Image (cartoon, rainbow, N blue to C red; front, side, top):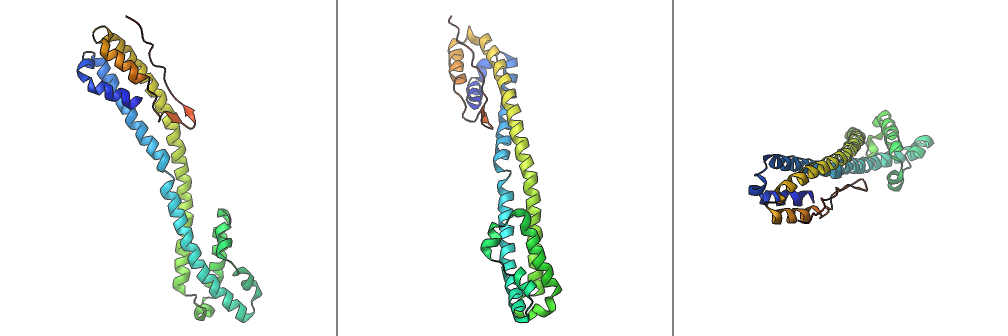
Length: 222
């Protein structure tokens, strides 16, 4: 309905220009609509890119960790190091289902073991390059988690801003209603169609599950 009202007034610019304050009120409404569109897009996209980064980094971390764990396991089995054998006995399914708070410590533990044994692991496919790449992917994963937390705050802030903007839009529409009344006597057809446009509820006027709408002006018979 907000866009509909703005479009209708724009189509009748010549009429509303007879009341300069109405032109200014329309510009205020247009600014609110622009802000609503921006905040709506922020609320919908704030998490998407961050979540994608997180899953990509975790996937790469798991891939490199499995290569490192495989080498560790083979070395431990050959040397009889049961402690490292148990620690390196991990599967992709376990890593997939492990909690976010537990994932990084598991990776770091195996990485530290590999760094301490790297001279002995060269013949088991565990190179310094593999260890370095694994550490880099783990750092990228931890960084993506932090950015996602920030993005969650951005999303919440955008939703709260939307509530305020829709409240502002109601006030802007009520001001326009008053000016439309001023034009009614001279431009009744314009006024009647304005009422029709005002009665069309904008699907987008729902924020956080709450409908936000203003009451259209009542038609007064002349």
